[in-house]
Every structure is written in C-alpha cells, then in structure tokens.
Length: 330
Ligand code: TYM
Image (cartoon, rainbow, N blue to C red):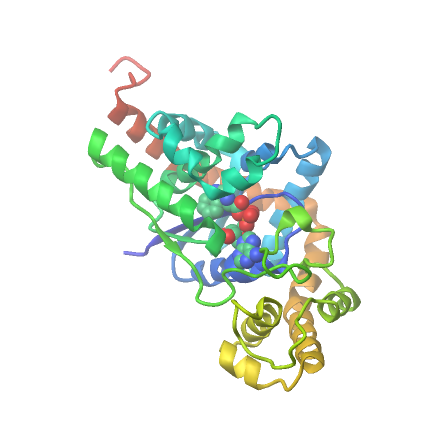
C-alpha cells in the first residue's frame, strides 16, 4: 500500500533556504511516491502573535511558494490548517491525554518562552496541535528538519498512549529527516539555526532573495581565521555550514564539496552561485503564481475539501473511542 505522508510549515515571515533544504525539497519528492498531505499551519502561527493582515498575506504567499517549489496540486493535497476545523478539535482530545510535564520539557517551548513575562497558553500546547495535524491523516511518515525531532517524538508518544488507553485509533508516525541539509545554520551566527524569526538579518537567505542579495549575504558569512576548507561542525561551524549548502545545492557529498574549493573566497563564490542557480526556477514560478491569487486559493479550497474528508473520519473515530456520545439518534 502507498504510504501516507503529512507535513506543515508556518506562514510566519518568508520562506528561507533552511526550510527549503530541510523539508520542502523532500515534500516535492514524496508527493510522487506517497499519498501526500501538506499544510500551511496558520493556527500554529497564532502563537507567534502575528499581526492579522500580515498573517493573511503570508498564508497565501507561503502557499504560492510551496507550489513554486514544486508541489503539484494533482499529485498532493495542499491546504490551510484553519480551513479544516478538525485540527483544533483533535488537538483538544489529545490535550486531555498529554501531560504538563512532557510539554514543559519541549526545548522549542523553553526557548520561545524564555525571558517572556507572559507566555500564551497556545505556545505551551503547540506540540499537541502539531501531533493532531499528523495523527488526523494517519500519516506514516513526516518529513521535517532536525529542529522538529522532539515534537515528532511527542506525537509518537501521544499516539501510542491513546492507542493503549482507548484501543487502536492512530497510526504511530515516523520522522523523515534528510541526511544533509536538515539543520541549516544562520550565516552570520553559525551556531544558531537559520530561522524565520531573524529573517531580516544578513544570516538568513530567503527563497525569494535576488542574486545580488544572495551574493552579498554569502560573501559576508562568518567563517574563521583558519584558511582550510573542511567540514567540521564543532570547530568550524561557519565554513561547515557553507560546505553543507554547497553540497546540497549541487547534489554532492560534504567531502566532495569541501575538496572542490581551495579557499574561503572560492567556497563563498561557488556556494552563492549554486544557491542562485537552485533558486532561480522557483523564483520564476513564484512570479507567475503571485499574479494569480485566485488560482492559488482554488487549489487551497480543493485541498481543504479533500483533507476534511479524511480528518472528519479520524475525529469521529477518536471521539467515539474516548466515550463522547455520537450525534444523532442511533
Ligand atoms: P517551520 O515552519 O518552522 O519550518 C518548516 C520546515 O522547515 C524545517 N526547517 C529547517 N530545516 C533545516 N534547517 C533549518 N534552519 C530549518 N528551519 C526550518 C522545519 O524543521 C520544518 O520541517 N512546527 C513546525 C510546523 C508544523 C508541522 C506540523 C511540521 C506544524 N504542524 C506537522 C510537520 C508536521 C514548524 O514550525 O516548522
């Protein structure tokens, strides 16, 4: 049987090459081999306190970018999370099986809550909503970057706990993390992952950055005082990040990529060129899609209708397993 795959991305800020290399490229490949469901997770973005008009705009932009990256509406189901209310519904059911202790141990929660005077409850329960996303679709596999590993473990734990408490209900999903490109680091601060929250900085390359911007950002990337091009995350984080980018963008191993460059200047020039070339077709397609918002919304509408069929069945199954009285007379 064809395996089911589910994954999601938040519509906060613009997509960067971290997400592209860590996740979206895998999504594109898996749409041809799996029954694929991909989601723009706008409910998750609410935890970041996005400004309403920006959130609405980014949701459509991210959906358009995912199509530009290569998602094909005939090969996968692409939709917006809030268009399928079952996500919030299942999240509540799962919240009643998750514990404060396990949610408090999530490192992303600890990082995001640190130093804040008041922490939204949604930030705390965020990983439960994420588990609901995945479990709703009986997903066997979930392609994500390294930073989502712990959340995936939680989704597995919640599924197994539910199954043993209420009987077999959910598929226990597996994380699919790519061997290279799963943790792209910030170019200006290579010990931190590249992230949307710093998307204005020099350290983040956006999928839509123009060639001159990409060149400038890569040229200014932090390296070290040594001169040797070598992959070693521990002692050479900046150089290793560039080597990794060059490797994934050109389809070579890290060792081959490192050996192909004699010094930092040529490493940077080759990396910038490879990224520009990799992003060029995506940017071209994006321009077309951005000119047709109604077309993109039609794709999302169709996707949500298909997603709701699956999601509705799962919520009924889980509700009944937990003892909720089914609506109707029989
Ligand atoms: P998000 O929106 O932050 O990122 C989307 C995907 O991109 C990956 N990623 C990276 N990969 C490599 N290097 C980086 N620097 C980098 N930054 C981001 C992420 O691992 C992710 O796969 N919580 C999720 C969204 C989500 C989800 C889900 C994912 C909600 N529900 C269900 C999978 C299944 C998030 O914030 O991803």
